[in-house]
Length: 482
Image 1 (cartoon, rainbow, N blue to C red):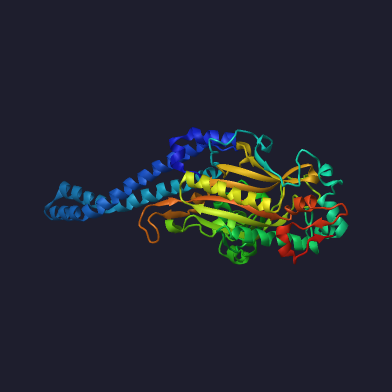
Image 2: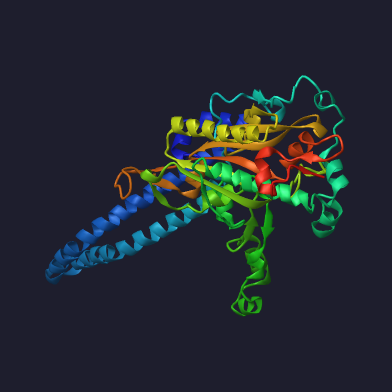
């Protein structure tokens, strides 16, 4: 969520930010609702101030008038009685006025909040302008000594490349048919050395990131809606998440509700709008790593907080019909080692940490000796929550191109505002002012997608696959599979 004060001060920046990200949001309507809420809030504050003043002054005034009333007669007595009645009724009148205005504020709040959640984080000024991933800019490439990018695979290896699908089918390392039978399209079952290699990569990635100061955490993959909203995956990405409708399953007894006077229409409306008990399958460990500290005030001394997890991830791949339907590239369920950093509200520190996180992934891929490149994402490919994002793509011979395997994001305070995650200056137990934290995240390894470049780049002419040296210890010392 963006800072509403920053929006008031410079709405043009946020209009342009939304335009460059190709995200439609009515900034003018948001400002109109914000002004209305602030005006109503000012009225409530004035009325509450009058309430306090009355609480101090009404008693003495009534006492004074009551003394005068004892001696008054005729019209003077009637006048004094009217003034006393007015004074006694004024607190109730004020209370009713406050309730009325608060009701008006409550009516404004849902639309205002919905619009605020739609406003994207403006891209940093040094992010290139573009409309889609086609406009992303290559930053750098890296290749192992045994791979010459100027030559094709055949020239490099001396034989034609098989795809990872061909290699898998040749050796029975996965069963796509039974995966589809179990769970539908884009599903698979890893078997034997396919499963061993998958787990080896994940274990190596967790050790690799742990050696670099990241604390391992196990997290739920089923989370409440507030975690998805807080991390910025809702409302914009709701169609990509799997929804567990616990609200309907745990709904109160309808017969009892009907006896209490609820109509059938009201029951249906409640079921459609009350998602307080619903759960969602996460598409990345980032959701839980960030969400577990929502609503907390951290001590400045514990920052930067560096966390990592390996978790099963779920994505519906809505809108991906017909894309990468074969193999392990675009699937509904996978496992991912994710790194997250929560730091102070300092842009320079955020940028430094971003570079460090990208460097860790570069070192990881270099240790696997996988050719890869860094891509600076353009404004149209950042998504709503990122101020900057760098994709890391690994070379995949079967695609005759690079394929995305990692993505490193810098979000500043966008997530932490939504999560209400702050830190207090002054160290442990400090009494300084609080500020919203900054956050960053990056993939360390997502498998089985990372198996595509490993299998294809390390294949041998007979169809066997040489196990990368750094993974052999996780494979029981095996040097070759297949």
